[in-house]
Image (cartoon, rainbow over all chains, first blue to last red; front, top):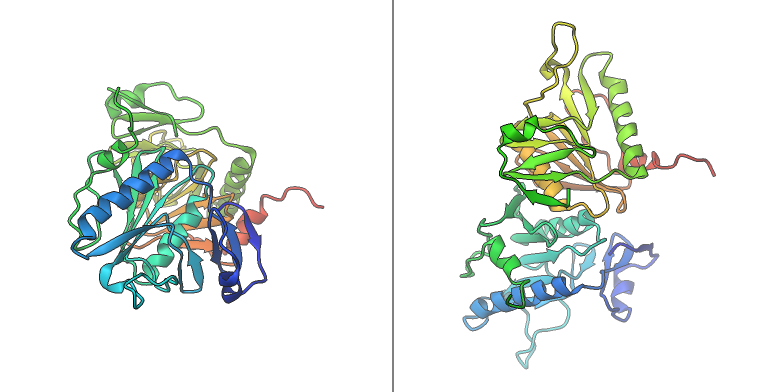
Amino acid sequence: MSVAKSASLTLEEFLKLPETKPASIYIDGEISQKPMPKTRHSRLQAKLINGINEVTEERQIAYAFPELRCTFGGRSIVPDVAVIRWQQIEFNDNGEPVDDVLIAPNWTIEILSPDQSSNRVTSNILHCLKYGCQLGWLIDTDDRSVLVFQPHQQPEFCHKADRLAVLDGIDLELTVEQVFGWLKMKAE
Amino acid sequence: MSVAKSASLTLEEFLKLPETKPASIYIDGEISQKPMPKTRHSRLQAKLINGINEVTEERQIAYAFPELRCTFGGRSIVPDVAVIRWQQIEFNDNGEPVDDVLIAPNWTIEILSPDQSSNRVTSNILHCLKYGCQLGWLIDTDDRSVLVFQPHQQPEFCHKADRLAVLDGIDLELTVEQVFGWLKMKAE
């Protein structure tokens, strides 16, 4: 997301472009591309997706999507993990989720990549909160810490044994240590 | 500030150590060193110091200090710019400011360095706000943006022509564009 180029495109025109890899996002007329995820980023994303869906999918509470495009409030963003409450997921007649998500996720999780602008990522979390999102996590792998954002509140810095706030109604107990413990893939 | 080492030192013991360059900071028993400032960081720091003191020193409203060690609430930190209201600056009999500052600055400004953990820097801004600081800026040079922190509020993302909140009582009008305009040192 570091390379931003000025676009004369409207949001509607942007949405008609083919998807890129990594995903492109649209903010205030500017198009930029998310950074290519590194291995640790990818690992945390996978474990978060899995850990959340394990307790939310069967009971149809919510679903955690990786790299889901969410377009609302004049921006089109792609959080690393977007958790949407089940009743807010739009399904087609086949019971499949529809492609265009036009709401903010209920819980947005961003994992900072090296060289990614943290202010810009934070601004996307704040944008989500402004449009109905209830929870944002900003994960800083190098610092082994998570900034937790909730509406109308100062963010909370969490590290070590701090227990992380999760979306209301999701039965998940996680400390910061547990999250970063997921990075360890090989026993000594 | 990226290289943190575990310390068995207490805050009191830490404060007796000789100063390092860049400065070392003490957070929750951990000692780490600020990153070596790069040229753009240094330039912004100088212009901010100058711009603030130009309107605050003569009328004895406040003073903006670069790299001032502030020790309070169990941490000893060194903001890039620490603005302290004049009446809160402690002077000795010679009218010189005393060396040990044991309060939070009234306005703390941090300029992100490449490879510096943004969460850790944010946590220092939040620590200041918790101990009486009224304003925090987190400057992201690559993103040309500033996150503005105020007590009990969500941070505000400012860029382009957004006018930046300054400490109450300081007569300074600054937009984000003006701040980053300072980076340009040579006319084309």
